[in-house]
Image (cartoon, rainbow, N blue to C red; front, side, top):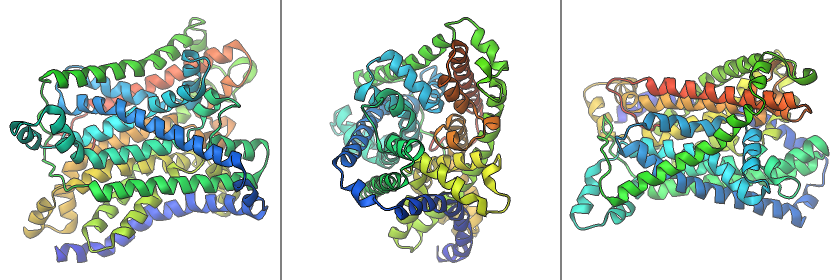
Length: 535
């Protein structure tokens, strides 16, 4: 393997410069610029010394932890259903669990406020978990589908009960995927914006909503900078805990070239898990059904209004044009994010297999995850402050929205690909190298076939995430280039029943586009390729 290492190292350096350079220019620079402006005004220490600041921190962390725990509890049965059973309708389940993730947060907030009019902590936790069940289910299912059943079967033959075999054999093997999913879900919940804004009202605020309030409404950059620093510290702490868990529990799983054969559940415990999974899928449909039913309150008036700009010209583009803007921006963002995420995953896996210190690998992994945990307000305003210094003044360019969306999608691609690439049996690579294959041919002939399906689903998931991205896009999209989620939010903030009908019709259109995109990917099968890492 010395030959492989020496031949790959120079190329690795060049590959690493691509995602790290993108991160430096389009994330680190804008965020540091905003923090510098805020710190220059002073008053940061006084903000940090206030009791209500730490109450914000406690509520942010608490609701994110509760939402993550609920998403894990709900997502694991669905992961089992997708990975280990051969029941009919699994394609429908895969589509259904992805739809919540793409919905604009403000619309989901309204749906849950309809279901739970009093809002509050329970509504916030349920809504955030609703968004993130897909992250848990499809991340864990991708690895679960490739675990060798023989280890658990051996434990059963030695007298272990089904639950004991799961907790002692299967669960430790799934730990890397569960840890990755939990880290992503926690970051999403900690930076949740629209859900908290709608369901929390003036009573409940997180760091994200408080940063927005101080930046946009109070123009308190020093206070916003202080809270952004706290948010960054919380993100780093979460990522460090996740890295520590992976270091202690990640095992060298032996992935086979094909998924384990799915089968019908046998025994009461397995059917109970299937029942729980079906109940979770049914629960996920409830807010979606509420949204679709709400769009039909006025008949088809809202759908006919998609060709227009709403009551009294509330929008500068029609609903159809906003949908096309969403499709174009999401396509550009996904292509960029999958490219960057794949390159970053290759570098991280290659470094972890070499003699490079583990701390360097984990530091790079953590850096690439940071965009998930920093306020979209901070990033958006940072773009407006800094990007005029680049050629072409990107602040007025249509590419600004795809760049911001790619920042969100890239970490998700990495989290989907990395556990799978790390779990490939190194002996397969050694055998290929011993037969004279170059390092790049080893990647092409061994790693790509095993992770090919994972890459395809990463593209699909990234695409639907970009379609529904609201936080950064809401600050960067111009009125004439508004995406569908931004248009929906603007319509809901304007008076007029026609605007409400158009907003909910647009939300239904977004659901249909999402279902079509996911169904298309689900219909594609790569012959001879594994469905590893399916999200």
